[in-house]
Image (cartoon, rainbow, N blue to C red; front, side, top):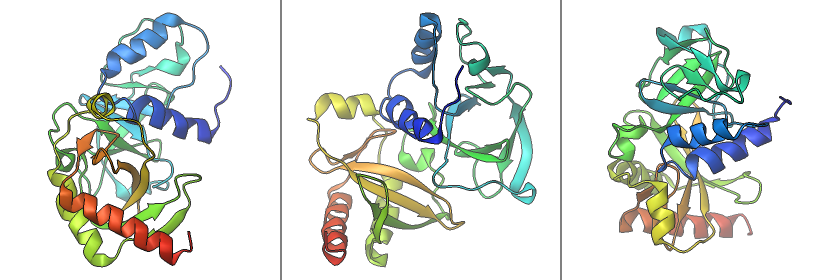
Length: 243
């Protein structure tokens, strides 16, 4: 199988995992495996029933002292068996070799972030999470929000502190309904690209759709207070940046 560059990982992460989290991951991957041929997967792993994706853009290599206890290991590598009918389950990874240990990341719940091969893998689907607060471990870790370009992902500016505070308060309360529900019940529109920053300097991207008042990815509808903050801060930041 040919090598896959990092930009492909990001696109696949959005297209396969974030944009369609509401679909059953096992069926999606099984269909791909049964089709046979040449594939390019996002860099993911499954452990404890949770699907994790490598957070390439928002994290750095994990130092040994940041690594917690071992919670499992990779038992099957999909990239090594592109035409297999193996069913996805705990221990399955797209690229990590079988035998790669999986560790907790100090400072975060294992249901949100784990470490493998010195990289941070972040939960994108958790069947036990009913809200974004249960999916993302933001309590005590949230720092601020910033606006990014929807064209190239470059930073444009930070939300005002009081606006970030509202975001950090409202986001964890949102109920997960799934991206399929969001897409099915709303017309296509351009998203507002946001980056959520955590206190340890790491971050992750979220995309908000104004007309739908919703986030894709895990799939959740926003509150009116949250929508007002996002739309207002986008206008303020873009004006200040001359955009």
